[in-house]
Amino acid sequence: MKTIAEINEKIKTGKAVVVTAEELVELCRSQGVKKTAARVDVVTTGTFGPMCSSGLFLNIGHSRPRIKIGGGKITLNRVPAYAGLAAVDFYIGATALPDDDPRNSLPPGNFTYGGGHVIEDLVSGKDVKLEVSTYGTDCYPRRKLVTWINLKDVNEAILFNPRNCYQNYNVAVNLSRKTIYTYMGILKPELGNANYCSAGQLSPLLKDPYLKTIGFGTRIFLGGGTGYVAWWGTQYNPSVKRKENGLPCGGGATLALMGDLKGMKPEFLRGASLVGYGVSLIVGIGIPIPILNEELCRWAAIPDEEIWAPVVDYSQDYPQCTGRVLAEVNYAQLKSGRIEVMGKTVPTGSLSSYRQAREIAGILKSWILQKQFFLSQPVFSFPGPETGYTFKMLKERPVKQNNKNEG
Amino acid sequence: MDKKLVLNFPPSLVDKPIISCLVKEFGLDFNILKAYVTPEEEGTLVLELKGEEEKITGAIAYLKQLGVKVELLSKEVEMVRERCTDCTACIPQCPAGALWLDQATYQVNFTSEKCIACGICLKACPTKAMVLRI
Image (cartoon, rainbow over all chains, first blue to last red; front, side, top):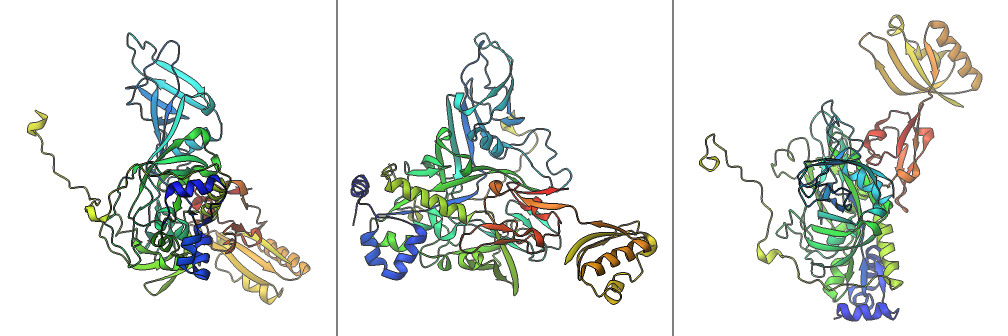
C-alpha cells in the first residue's frame, strides 16, 4: 500500500518508478502483478481521438467604447460562438459551423471548417477574425466590432470539455446496402469496414475501470499542457455492463476536463472534418494512475486482448436505438486490421490514433520523471456502480397546442 | 516497366474487345484500376500496363489509332505528413492497399506506387492529410 503523498515525495527525490500502460502490460507479463505493483509508482496513459463535447471559454477584454457581446451575436472566423454570458465572455463549441456552411444539403457534406478548427487555429498562434453585432445600452453603447484576436492577447482561454475520454466505445459497421457517413467515419455497405475509437490498453479510463484514483481535481495531460478533471462527464454511466475483469462492455464512464489553452499545443488539439457528419476537435489526454495497491496494478495491466468492445450497426441499430450488439471483439483483434463479424472478415480502421496515445503516455512519463508534474489527490470521487447512477434516454412528452403552462 | 493510363472510349468503341488485344498482340499484362461507362455510353478505364517498354509504346499507338483517347494518369494523391495523426481511418477505405499501418510504430504509411488516385482517402481523413495534385 502506498499513498499519493508518498509517491509525490518519491517524484521529488527522483526515486519514483514511472512506466507507460504499455510497459506495465509487459512488466506484469514477465514479472507478475505482485512484484510489479510493489515496484511501480505511476502508470501513464494516453488517448487521442475526436471528442465532440469540447469547447473553449474566452474573455477578450473590453473594447473602447465598451460592447456587450452577451445577448448579441458573435462569430470567430465566421463560426458562431455562444454569447449568452457577460459582456466579453463567450464559448465556442467544437461542432459549431459557419451559418452558410451547406451542411448535408448535398450529402455527404465536407464540413471543412468549424469550431474545432477555430480552437486549433488559436492554439497554433494564428490570428482569428472576430465579428460581433449586438444591441447598445447606456453602459455598453457599441453595437459592431470586427477585429483580429490572438491567443496571446486574450485574458483567459479556458478549454472546457463537458464530455471527453470515453472509457470504452462502439465498433461501428454498416449492414445496409449503401455507404453511410457517420461520426465513426465512412462505413462501407454490407460490413465493408469496421471503425473503432479507443486507444485500448493505453486508454485512461480502461486502466482504472472504477475510477478509484481519478476524481474531481485530478491533474492530467490535456492538449499538450496541464489540465484538470472538472467533474464527471456527461452521459457518465458507471452502471454499464461489465466483464469479469471489471472492464465495461461499452461506453461507461466519461470525464469533464478543463485547462488553460495558453499552455497547450496544436499537435494535441486538432480540428476534425467528418464527411457527412460535421466537425469536431481531436483532443489529446493523458492521465497518471498511481499504483497504490495490487488491485490497481492488475487493472492497469489489462492488455488489449482482454478489453472488449461491442460491434454495432450504424445504418439501423444505432440511429434507431435498438440496443442490438452484433458481436464482441477485443482491441488486439481490432488493431490487427481485421475482425470477424457475422462470419465475414472485416477490415478495421480507427478514429483514435494509437501512435499519438503512445506519445502522450511517454510525454507524461517524462514530465513526472523530470519533476515537472506531480500527482493530485482528488477532492472527491465520482459516483460508482453502487450508487445506481446511470444514463437515461430522453422521455419525450408530447406538447399540445394551448398548453396551460404557455398561457 | 509499368505505366498507368487513363483511356477514354467513344461510344462507338465501348462494346469492342480492345483490351484483350493488348494481351494477344502485345503480350502485355494489365490491371484494371477503375472502369466505368457514363450515361452517354462513353467508357473510361484506368489501366496499369506491365511489359516491355516498346510493347507498351506500340499498344498506346494502337489504342490511339482506334480512336481511344490515351492519357497518362496524372492525378496524384500525396500525404502531407505533418497533418496526419496516424489514426488509420483511411486504411480500410483504400481499395489499392496504398495506405498501411506499421504494426511496430503505429505510423500510417502511404505507398504512392500502389495508389490509383480514386480519392476516397481525401474524404476519409478527418485532418485533411491526403491531398490531390493535378
